[in-house]
Amino acid sequence: MANCVDLMRILLTGASGFAGAHMLKELLRVDKYEIICPVTYMHGGNVRRIPALLEAKSSTDYKLIELDLANVNAVEQLADIEFDVVINFASESHVDRSIKNPLIFFHNNIDLMINLLEISRIKKINHFVHISTDEVYGSLPIGSLNNEWQFPHRPSNPYSASKSSQESLAMSYCKTFNVPITIVNSTNLIGEAQNQEKFLPKTISKVISGELIYIDTDDAGKVGSRKYLYAGDLARAIHLIINNINFQDTLPRKFHISGNEEYSNLDIVNLVGSLLDIKPNIENRISPRPGYDLRYELNSDKIRSLGWQESGKIQNHVDRILHWTLLNPEWLTIDYD
Image (cartoon, helix red, strand yellow):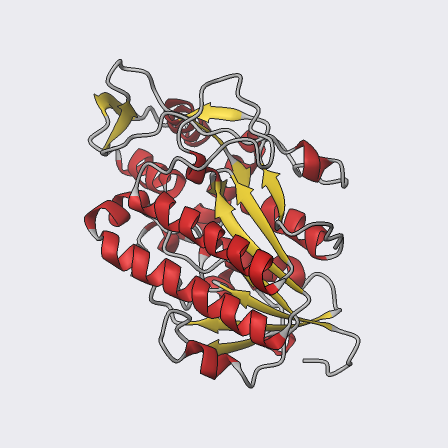
């Protein structure tokens, strides 16, 4: 790792998780960063993910340290680490598990956020970028643009409530302690090396095996939909954000990062089946998930005005992800640890 004082020193959290690993891969495309990655492999992270995504990239370009950010001693453990930018991907991130074990989600996601904000306040860092989700706004009807700061938070489950809490904490540290913060809300992510509990890898596995795939609907039988986004495209958007700093008020900066293409769950299953040339075994059902959200919405005109756009259509991304997964079939059996 280079020691030049002009390098941006980044604390990248959640790097062993799915989206965070794609962020690490993106940052390593440019040789102007010192990157420190605290990892535990306890909250959806996997020890094999970074090597799988980075392939031959040298491990000397980043440093992994074992550190649980939600631990009571995390602030003290971070005190001796040099960094001036935080990119925070660290969070438990699955709705069904949050419903089964809400206390785990709240304790982890809120405690790690408080610790990161507190060390950022103490160190007077240059920039704190927090990655949130479209789910904090709850379900929105077709026609809702949802620009930044337009809608209040209406989380429907413990996971989205914990992410909403993280945003509230970020706003308080920005207002009270002048920590320079950017909040990024993104739509549903897809990409290589995603945990099998997520919809796309689960669908690939079930289509290949011929297992029954349930398509969840609301009580009226309407199928849910999402605006999917390739994880590498989110990483590129965040890369753009950390190099375009313009803090103007006491609220955090806020960016919505959304794909343009909306797919129902049924569309995704049929797409995977078509690409594999296998007819999926499908059955519709009313969602058993309490607080089921039919669809989310984000308007990403603001980040697009900075020059960001998707790198390709979702169908092409799914095709590439599918081929990568068939070459790396262990990711169809690696579940949440």
